[in-house]
Image (cartoon, rainbow, N blue to C red):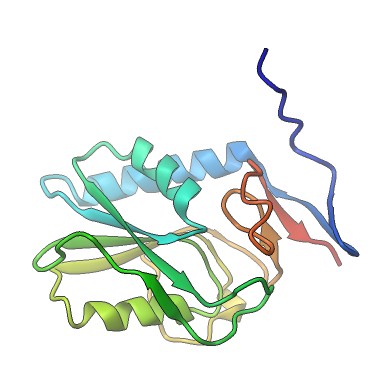
Length: 187
């Protein structure tokens, strides 16, 4: 008999910090489907390349791709700017390059969360050398009050407060990615 997932939880305690429910699995799936329909409508007749930013985007990208109803390809970047901390180090390292050719292609960057915008700025700079036809960004979560760079997010799932969140791919020291809902740090 398969195990039972007991979610959503009333709270998740990490050390002395308490995380409380913020976005349910149902809310996330509904918004992901809406974003996929919008993207499908705009990219009909093309074959865009969805490029996920690992590790956090893998769940969101997986669900997004399943809702998209156009032909597409996928690839992944792996960047590091957080390590095991709750705030960005301010430095981005490219840990995994793309495997696909992007010259002349329509690119959709898939992020789990945009906080300061540093990773997106870094990716934009990388693509200035690669000559894609277009580059757009979809992010499940955006912290508009935390943005430090002038970047454009073309498709936004949810604007959220400038608080730390975990679950649905978002981690705390590489843990809690497997939660189906998103939890936010309580005050």
